[in-house]
Image (tube, rainbow, N blue to C red; front, side):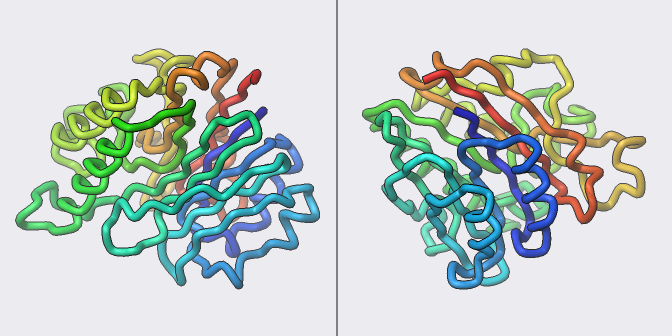
Length: 260
């Protein structure tokens, strides 16, 4: 079973590259973040034409939004409000084998890494804290995917020293993510298959005129799994070439293959 996660940054605007990716790689399940569309306007026909007939949506107009599109049966499970303001940032489903699949879009957190000066940063930390409390009570094998908006390791960013005070790589965010990982006994599948300090980026800013030449990447997108699911993972791939496609997202797809 191939499971893909991709912050698509508007699914309607980039439906062409989504279709291209699905044709070329044929994942069983696609988890999207930042779909930026209400459920009634989601481009369902494009996915159904490619065999993705099991679809669960949690959309929001112009902002946020998550979706799970599958070729295999899934059951709607939950939509947790870890943002505590009803933003569409999480959706979870159950696979037929009993494994849970949770798709999350963690807030970016603004530009200033200070809870008092920047309420968005506090919201991000609180979001991760709520996920941590949820992780403590997990009772079945679970796969957690999505845009975490945190690059935890020194080798997860292009320059550890220059980004220490930049939101997404600050010590307080890294500590919060570490506590989340410990709470659920999560295996970071990206680093399991590509151990640090191997280069492993999933995001490059639109601000760079030549993203490949500057290569100022960060690993913001992750796939984690608990016991009962992690041991079935057989590979993890980052599709860096998608960053050069027509009208690309600033994130690229990541995929883990499982042998259940």
